[in-house]
Image (cartoon, rainbow, N blue to C red; front, top):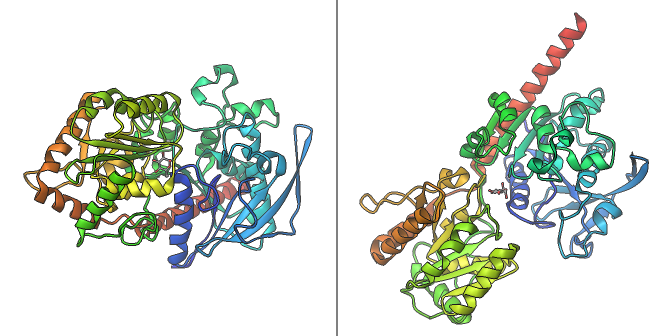
Length: 500
Ligand code: GLC
């Protein structure tokens, strides 16, 4: 099989920029593809917080000027060879990306996001046009890149370079479809998705980037099989379900992997003591040191429930908050690290004051502390209302912290309910999204935690499971080939119609 040439486009790519799992995927998937022998490159915005002295970046001699609604925007481009040895190209526009770093690493919280990412999409296409690299597939990630398939299919249709380029659009989270919440846009302002996006500054706010991608991309996928089915239902479809239904045959699900070179208790530099399945007592050492360091009661027998996630409704904080007082009366400790979440943050702060020996809450999110939590905790809580894939539960499995999850999306594709009679299963799963069901799952986990030998077996088995990127990367290659085939068939059809 011939090697493929693939461009990844994303609004965030680790280690340069990261607000969530998207950045991990857009770092690790190209890396895994490269290992399989394919040629990859990536394109992302050059945010003001990406410091030139930290990374080796070179300026490219390509200059671009785009006119939009009577304004001129000048673009520059930079290139870096990322730590994983493939080229990452940066799109530089001072006003839209470069000068927005006043609030730390904030990438998205701006009123002109429609304009920012529309121009990012056009600049990405123009950059590819100027490079020697001849891609066969452009892989677009999440809404910020959703106009690329749209522009390619209409505006750039006749360009030699793009005639035979296929597009794959990956949905990492359907809640986000454009600069504004889709369901909050008045009906008469909603983007119909037809033709090209509007060239009017005000109207950029109402563009639905995801809809335009779904209408134009050759193939669409989400980050788990289950989520691919869920987005076709009213419950999880976020008002896009009918568009997905129409393209049902072209929608796939591929579960994400995790990078075991980064997430591995055998050599993670962030944890206190390294361990693996043969030396589980060292996991307990992590627990004891953690308890001491953060002034919790030092006792190996007390179960620690860990959480390292954004404090949002999606991640299940509504349920957690409801149960907090009740749980804190039990013989356990809860440790949370996470950013955001006004109301949730306040409640956690208050509870921490009331129960300082039992609840530890650290905000904003810190990766090094998150790793210590994975290593120190016995149980990992991830009761997301919906979850396209979820990466934390995969990390927690590798660190031997047994996940409690809601039966949705990627959580259900990766965690199965533990059955103490058969010893099967790698976590605790609850089916309906309410506090009682979550509480019941927590109670089952706590009961099982008391049975030390069986719990050790459960931990060992969970740590041995593999969710590396090799298999998902191979599945993406199959999808790329499908997308190429699809694009060719469409082109041939168009040609015959024209000839007639
Ligand atoms: C989004 C989703 C999460 C997924 C990640 C990477 O953050 O919410 O479930 O794991 O993207 O695909």
